[in-house]
Image (cartoon, rainbow, N blue to C red; front, side, top):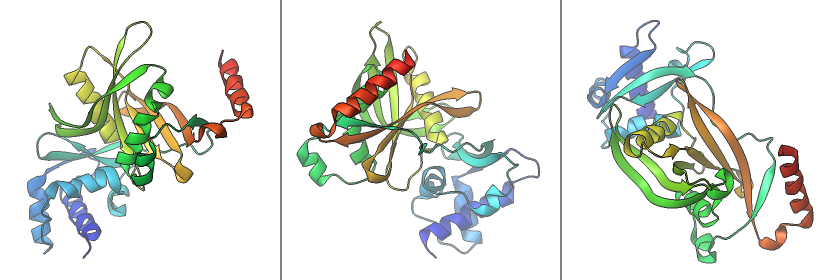
Length: 267
């Protein structure tokens, strides 16, 4: 049995063993992973947390779990403390790039040696965003990378991880904290990660204005940036832009005229 099939069998068994008809939450913990794996005659994975991680950030939950969600809703897995989790029903609103958006060309400032050896994963995406100051461009404030892969704990959630944290300042002197989640390849932006980023900002840097960002590699090297905001129990897209990093000479007078027109249309 492949790891993917093992994980699906385990998480499916946990859900159906604990789900009650009409229930909107299904709590479980890491010990349940070991117990259900043994019951299924599956060798428990060495990293128990990876079972949960795979369905929170990489893969869809098994169809038999999703089928238990009412129309317009879906199941996700949220942290509920150290080694504790819960399936929870939320509005079914995918956090995916809008393929109809216009693309903005940005002169590529990525160092050549980075471009030569970069992979197509989240670290490559974070590097390109950083070197090209795309967070500054997107938000319209001066931003500075504070820390990569911040691992910390949040009350009620347990351990959480943010891909990168920026701090920023605007022309009025207001300070911002900008957590960034990056996804390359087939990985998907997760509302759970965005919720965790917001919780980290509220708990660790409460005097700063939190503006959570998602970055996603698209086809042909396009980079989608999202700004999210929390509305009640939901995470919504506040704004979205698509950028293409190009050689400076590829930004034509026609492109610049078009961008100027966008600006005049907004004012």
